[in-house]
Image (cartoon, rainbow, N blue to C red; front, side, top):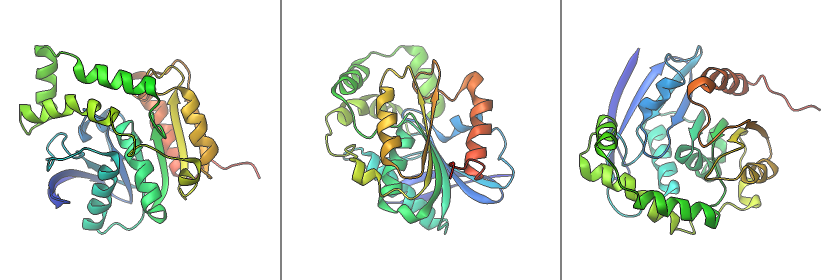
Length: 254
């Protein structure tokens, strides 16, 4: 059964869907996407889990109150969401934008995240990455792009323009994504880091840095994988592997 609601959180209207019954599993989508993207991975809620699937601030059916867009703010929104739902402790999966929000969440309130999977995350943005982000913000968009985005994002064309402009602002922000090893070391959650070895945005060396810094972390490098390498043919093995990890079936050798 799927239920949906819109909650007032931190000055915005946050849309969220809930599917299944059991432990809370928070799913955070990537930039430019919506919570509906997760149906490409979990068409039905896995046994034993209730999926908590929001449209993040400024995406889909959720509003944005204006002002700077930061990954930290997304994390604070998710804390507000889980507080509103009276969910104290939970597991989580985030991809790209959602994964970076999870890094913030798991360092702001480490005790709340039991286990998490972060896909295509980064502790900081190298200058080469910032250049690619600025180029993405300056790109033009055709009618097909507009049609696709209007299907996903329901707050009007200004919302879509803001999403497309967002990488420029993020590229110019040197504070929001600045995770040092000691800061990542605060994470208490068992963490699976998933990264494509051909990610054009974030070199795989960044995943190795996170793996070295996060105490209870495992690393899965997807061969020939690009950015967000969990969709398409990889979706079924990703879902199986992520659930095995979240279910506690992965153990470090003693």
